[in-house]
Image (cartoon, rainbow, N blue to C red; front, side):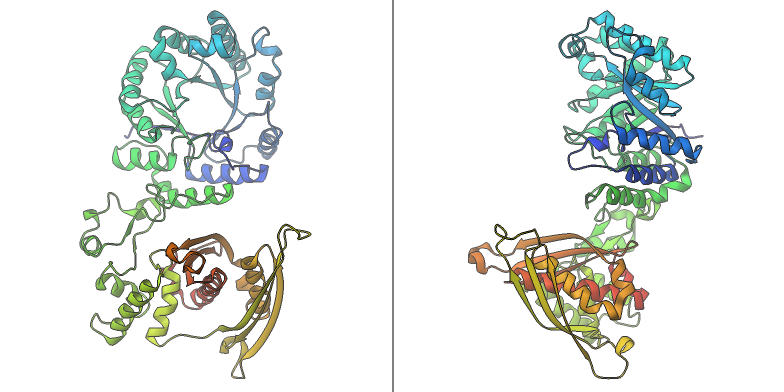
Length: 544
């Protein structure tokens, strides 16, 4: 059987220390349930002694009577303060009161930190480790020891660093976790030190790395190869400073490439979905280029690459993307080749041939649009609408007749609502207006800037016709890029908008010398694509 590697997720504790991250109690519950479904072994949820939200989180699960199916919740805290017993330390007592069956205690293993930061003697620090772990063990807790700054401490005073581990092991710690807290170690250092520690102790060894040198994943993997059997990290890699070891890269690397067992085999296919869910709840954009789970992790653009992948995916893919719940994407652009475009278009019109006049028209349209500054490799949904026109199956749905923007001076505005959009659209969708005359609708709305006001006005105008569809659409990203800065304020701009309905995401693009007009084009395409995708499931191939 494959060797088991224990996965210890710290998204809710170490991840919460990342800049820009602020989990609500409900956010933490949702993420814990998602990680549990994936099959991680431990979920470190926070420090109940210092954070009321963490205490509320533990209380929720204590009252639920063990509602997680697989994972164990972990309460995190430090060794007792110097000068008092663990039994009298309020933070240690809070770990007991949390109701968590497992506790992770961090303590100093670098003599410099003991004497210069903690202002304690070296012997006193060892007593603090022994007393805290022994007390928690006596209360029936499973206790792990995070040896903070272990690698830096080992390189400067290996004897004392090992003494801190020995104090924890002799007091009953079930795992000794070696922490590269500053994130400055190299893989060769980690590998050598973990091998030596693994030979020294019978207690399981864990690894906890930070990404300050962009080596957290590599350091975690070499630690496992050197003898570590527990890996700590956060699920999408975010954390304090440059982040923590990224478990969404470590898990598939160890399990699919090196034959270890990290999570249940049947759960690995949910890896991408879980990474995107965690990012969504954390209100951050998942790195599109993230290994394994990123949107572009299996995206191909060059014509020769695409041709090779179509013949044999292993020619340019290190694993099958479906194994981890991701998908191959052949990007459409002027360099991607006729075969790529044909395969994409055949998803919606299977009988289309390579030499057909429609295919020629699509290629010409692509070249013409990209020459104007459009970029469809990141906005295939907009190109899908243009394909429909070339194929002669375009349904108008709605079109703009005119719009007007009134903006106040932001400095003198009474509130942040500083723009008003007024627009008139023509609804010509026979599914909602029947065979009668097109309907003209006038709407006006205020917003936080012109684009927000336009978005709200458009939704208001369309609400009576597409209420249910509009309710599910949410804009998740908005980007503006100047295409040619040589014309200063007259330069053309490209606007990319990412939208979601909670199940799928799609991206649309607009180009103009007027940023509001470019934004309007991308907004209009976003809603049109959603309506078309709901009516014809074949167009889901242009979403992700």
